[in-house]
Image 1 (cartoon, rainbow, N blue to C red):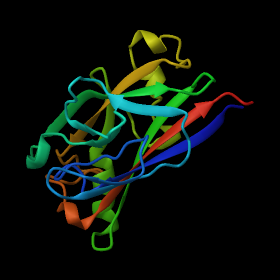
Image 2: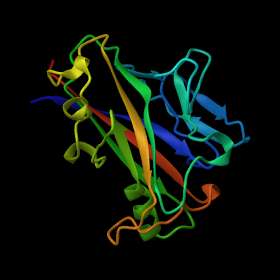
Image 3: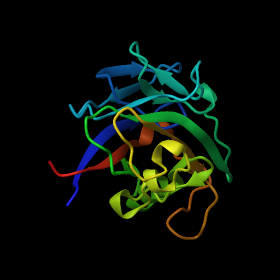
Image 4: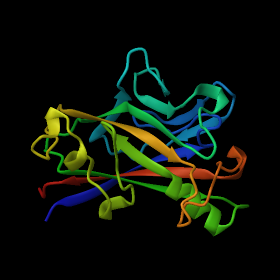
Length: 205
């Protein structure tokens, strides 16, 4: 039975001012708009997040070159209302462990002291991870496995070996569907926080 782990990244003031927080750092990251984004380091150093592009596009990095924030469109937000906005393959996830990585799953959790549960559910439903033009069901371990969906050669066998990397991006769907996603625009960035959970699956020791 494979072992599953979670790596948590805090997302503060999502997109409007900048940020998905990344790995490889601790403390507070300042976006160009002056908003603060906490970077959560769980002590799990089995994966690293770095920019796909050099210089980085739609991401900020810390002094060590790790992704510290995703900033689609910069301080102007980069999102269109009543539209689907995609930021393709902007982050590279690398296996820096000594074992094969068997699965990578994503989920989003929105929290707020002022927004309703229905609005928070809609925020979560509007966010999906992408890879190579494909949109992943980002609902945790019941969703899509990045390593199964991505067409890159490194994961042709469905396994990310030590030292190998796979890119991913982000989609924000602000076209109301009548289901869980009912938003035409995201709420004000001061009103909520989002946590991106990266669930990883490893062989038993």
